[in-house]
Length: 162
Length: 162
DNA sequence: TCCTATCCCACGATATACCATAAATTCCCA
DNA sequence: TGGGAATTTATGGTATATCGTGGGATAGGA
Image 1: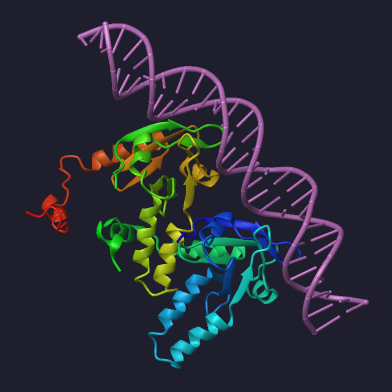
Image 2: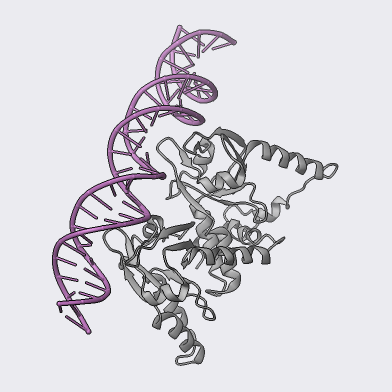
């Protein structure tokens, strides 16, 4: 399964269409549903969209089944993720249509930043994202967040682990 | 899996193309994706690029899945590694195209130094790298750098156990 | 009917494929 | 041991294909 990598800013036209970056589409090429899933990102301030492929959602759903059925926690996630999600197929040139309410919630008007985060991605209004990433950087100043994680990955074993 | 060894300086042409050193490519030969991944090295001062193969990133991604989905910690690392990463396939002669913003961030113009670091490598503007290595040398003056005992590393591998 | 979503084209920018050359290395055989 | 010959590697230029983008046509639903 491919990973979503790098950050791309694409234009949103007057009809609400945006090109999904070609490498994002490539990461989802072998999936059955040809398109992406978007749902509101942060539950407090809906300032960005979370995105993924259909298979990821299915895995997430499977993970939620470990929580007690009808528990408040499970219900909360169900509402914020599944109920609010939009299943957006590509048109023939690889574009999707952003639902109006998602554009309004995120402030996206003429541009959208696609931010690859590995198994998922995010969609932001570019300036809002810039502020977000600046804040993130300031918070982790001095620390090197990548170092411990890389040491983890460098370990020889995890290939066949499950 | 091969290791990235030695330091090579290659030319960057007017289109931003650079040859990945042949022995680096050999280290990634058996990987599915024929190319390299680059992302900003130091998060504070982006003066060099970190490089690796796709499988390395996939293992890193798998490691991050042990963190809670959508957690802040996971998201922070994702932003610094995946969002800033570029997936660069070789052309038919083993070259990659350096993204413009990476060249600007590192000061790379006409030359790039590929520095093998074992499981990963780095890409520097040659003069900047020279300063860096000089500083490193000064800092370790008199001391003698040591590595973890080899016996420790050999232990987890049951294959050749005595 | 009107509105909106999907399809169908067409265009410009740019990345990728395809060539060709030169330097360096390895290989082979005298 | 030395001197080519054949490969590999790095590098440069040109052509082709892909991607993002825009606009118009068509179909379907309210």
